[in-house]
Length: 201
Image (tube, rainbow, N blue to C red; front, side, top):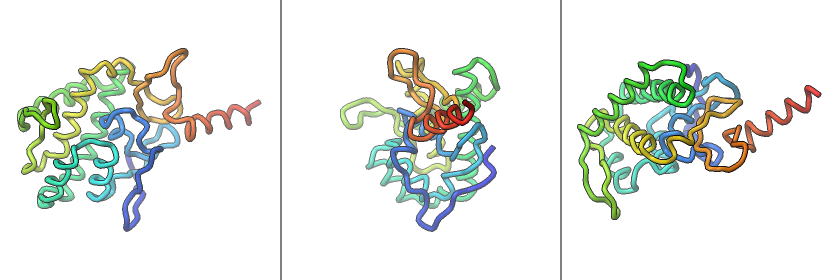
């Protein structure tokens, strides 16, 4: 449950350290600053943060992001709250999918959100491939965009490679070999875990 925010007039500045999921759907789940299993600090504080994150994570094609920005009347406080709520519900769903424990009802709600998103979207060719494109003129447009990203992830080969960091709540696609990746990022959780292990010796 997110209980605090990181706010600056310029919004959050996204870097490679924010985008370790390997897929926009997982990077969306990771839009919470987390040094443990807490999910305490919000990064999507304002719509500007959502827009800049979507661009950095590749959630939307540039042309679609431009279209979204041209319809700000759909991006109110209630819609942002709904997006936060959807993210935490989707987080619980992916915990269930990857671990077999947790809230099965959250998974059912994510599946319903995907069906609803498809129902409001257009299946068309874009940039040389067939894609679902969400309706710009609806308050559900951002939730639909992320739900469609989850649909893409969950029917891809990467769906079986989704892992959760051993130290924080972030998810990532493990495309490595061998024993498998344990941390979302060695620069953050990996180094913290190594430091803690060293102190305990």
